[in-house]
Image (cartoon, rainbow, N blue to C red):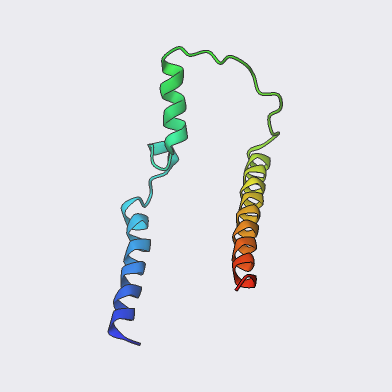
Length: 95
């Protein structure tokens, strides 16, 4: 292996392991890995905001919600991939 490859591999290992060492033993209960959505939701509810309406349907569990989000992302990726492929094929066929 080239020296540059070894250095890049070491950098990847260090970047991957450093958060595990820094945050070992800490979890979501300590405030780590909470995410911006939780912070924003808490900040909004502290102002006394009342929602204008309720959702028409809520997924029965977090797993279903994650599944629907992943499905939406996959459909979007398929559409974008199709459009890129279409225009690339169209450009190659005109030559």
